[in-house]
Amino acid sequence: MEIRQELVKELIQKIDNRKNTYGSVSVKSAIMRHQGQWRNILTKILPLPLSEVYTPQAKLDYGDFVLIEKLITLDDLIEIIRKLPEKGTTSITIGDYEVQVQVENLQRDSYKYDSGTEYLQVGWFYEKYQYRSQSQHYPSEPIVTPDLPLFPDSRTAMEKFIGIDFSHYSEPYGIILCLPNYGAKIEVVNIGSKEIRIKIQPKAEKIENIIGKIYCRKDREARQEDIKFETETASIAIGFVPDFFNLALISEANGEILDTRRFYSSWELPKGIVFEIPEYELLELIRHGETKTTEFKEKIGKQEELAETAVAFANGRGGIILLGVDDHANVVGLPPGDHEGTVTNILRSHCEPQVKYEINKHQIEGKTIILIRIEEGDNKPYTVREKGVYVRANATDRIATRYELDEFYEERRSPFRHSY
Image (cartoon, rainbow, N blue to C red; front, side):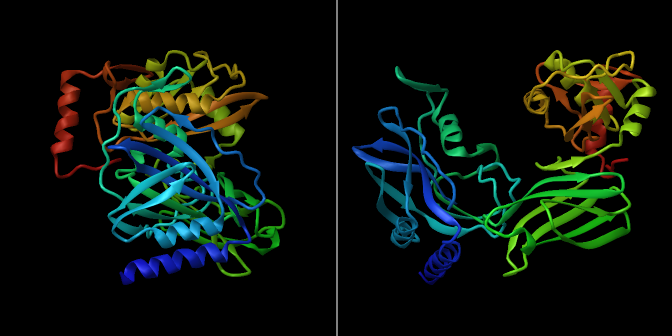
């Protein structure tokens, strides 16, 4: 009981500290009728910025399964927090529904999520608390009525309506409360060969009160610097391209962390971090033509062919795919469009296991090209779904031989596995 009381006190205190930046509170819920009672499957609660005009989503009523969003006040939120037990069952009102909520325990996530974290679609630096419930049995058949959108199952419906990525969340049951910090956030970090450029978005915090602190390292060389923002963009000379960096925005007024970004070279590139290659380096790369680690594609083309090259690079030593460059090393450019999103969807849906990659847009001679950097994989062999394992041979992709497959599996069994 003491743990619950401490967490409730902590929650209410944090909400009170941010009452000058919080406005109404969004409550998005998936509820299901069982034996005549409405039960909570998943609810996400998110205080919205004070200055934001927000219209809640329309209710989707599929009979015994309902998706609903309502706006409540901060006082209503505090009342819910005080009412929910540490363990047990209670009922709360969500819109016009009296909903049973079962709580197994109240948990505070010790990790603080930066604004680039997408699996709960908050978009700002935030802390997460969860009133966890037992695993729920929810409809697995298609969700559809004549007047509403069709979803293949309730899980997909909840992902879309509530805003949650189930592939990154193993136990999304109960009530999830996110407490954002709307002071300021990091929008883009551009990493060049000699400097790092940071663009931020101040909101509740005045720009003159925002301090940036950065730690960068490459091999044994490291730099620690403070950044003072006079405008929304600041640059800092590093002198090398870091293998690791940690960036934090801090309020000078109260010392509170406003946002963070971290990057390791072995990670998939986080949202909002872009590696810049000077135009002359790209032109030199293109001049050398296609190689074992470089592939040109005039356009995205067939999805499987792009996936074949990505998998071949992951099974080798990594490589670069340039979109908007033809087979003769001519920069033809790409038309306007969300090429980054298309490439991401292709790689995620066709490569198994997932390859590690980063995608950057560049301008060459006034034309747009896309650079896709594929890292050497640490879980070989990588496969194109329903096609097989591909490897790189000179400047082409081909199906791996039986001998090459044996080598992959032998390497995985070896206690001396390493990457080059």
